[in-house]
Image (cartoon, rainbow, N blue to C red; front, side):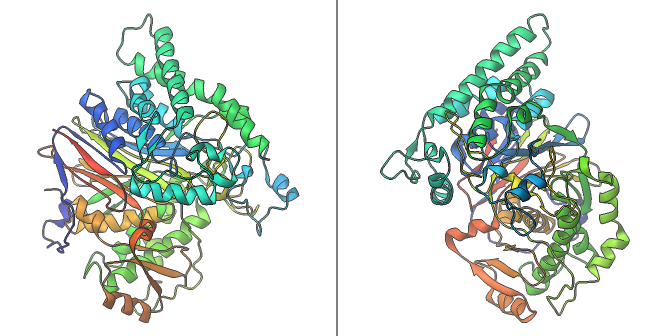
Amino acid sequence: MFEPAASETHTPFIFASRRSPVYATGGMVAASQPLAAQAGLEMLRRGGTAADAAVATAAALAVLEPCSTGLGGDGFALYHEAGTGRVHALNGSGRCPAALDLKILAARGLGPGAPIPPRSALAVTVPGALSSWCALMERFGVLGMDAALEAAERLAHGFAVGPVTAELWAEGAAEQLSVSPGGTALLVASSPPRAPRAGEVFCNPDLAGVLGALRRAARDGAAVTCAGDPSPSCGPAAEARAVLDAFYRGDPAARIAAAVQAAGGVLAAEDLAAHRAEWTEPVSAVFGGVRLFECPPNGQGLAALIALRILAALGEPKGDPLGPARLHNVIQALRLAFDDVRRHVADPAFGEMPVAELVAGLLAEERIAARAALVSPGSAALPGVQGAPGGSETVYFCAVDRRGNACSMVNSNFTGFGTGIVPEGLGFSLQNRGIGFSLDPAHANALAPGKRPYHTIIPAMALREADGSLYGPMGVMGAFMQPQGHVQVLLALAEGLDPQAALDRPRLCLPAGTAGDEVRLEEGVPEATQRALAALGHDVSVVRGYDRKLFGRGQIILRDPASGVLCAGSDPRADGFAAPLP
């Protein structure tokens, strides 16, 4: 009952999933950490919307997985509004400091051949995550920020660390926290300081203090603003605006600016004060009976849409889903898509072409046909194709409430703990999204004051094309793996797999995305397929064990339009699960 309409005559390939999908009628939250999913579920239990649940989940993950997300990172969301059937896109990415430009970087020895180092304070853009939470709450929430931050504050006083998170934390301790200003605040106080181990209780009193202060600001703001306004909508909106002001114009903003400047950066308190998340129109394309929605540029969601349209032009889906013919086409479609977005995706506020016109051109039928014609069934060659994606740590989560509202959301620090810089007394590290800029002045994505960089984090949302009903939110986190993950799980769903089986299926990843670069295959892809791809000219390697994190960590919640029953899955490559509400 969860298949797209176009799949009614299709016999799905059998795939043996290791976990059962989760069913529910009252709501669902899926996240990479069980305690975060429970925080979101509590909001649904109290009558909250998918927006309330998403904000509570996001805040909890900022505590539970600081190696991947936090108040020092960014956030994007797609929201399906059940009452109107519309999908809204939210851009919570931060901008380049007003005092930073290419001339300043060149004076410091940084240019096209020497980009901004990942741990440099010059890589810090305005952290936009909290602005995305506030925007969601102000427009679609009913319970308010005080309630949404409650679980996160409680968890910050002490929680048991999950096993995958412990591994990522240990990597961040070695690569960022141990060598960055203030970084040891996010480590266990030992000699030398270290990352917490799996099952070990970690306390973050600084972050608990920040969250507590934001909750007080929410209560005080609502008390003042809504004293003479009895409408139910006043409270959540007033709380969101008060929290936004307390963070971006208050003590946290001053501490963030001071930490960046002390480390050699130029981010100023005025940059934070000027920041707001932005509601935009999503971009979309049809595949397999569903319309897949993505956030528009400066995000890379277009890569998934382009790749899916190329696969449709090639006649996909067909054949063994883990066979060489299918995977060869997926690899080539993704390479072509990355080539397009790396050339064209940038902050639309600085572009010469409106987003709608850019998207229409890149997804035009004749252009897609021409790109598909570059794919040869007998060769890995793609002359002239460029693009160079890489890797990072991120969290993806989603929620659906009993009304049919749905939220698909991604929060991220970018490369693990980002720069690893932890402002004094705040308990979170600052992102390094500035490395997403090009330092080539002729490039569409060239760094400029007030500009948002090319962004990797992309939530997804799907509606049934036949009747516009909610199919479901979905996503796969992990930098440039994200559009690759979207393509692969949607292919699996189009074949009739349930959400859990679609997430369990082995994946491929292009670690660099260039025409002749290596193709990473997850353990479980048949050896015959590995050999056949190598014979076509692909440089193939197999990834096993913990290193499978390369293939991302996803969540999916599908909704049956007739019964309203929800069916969900959570990626086995993470610590999380899908939490149902009866």
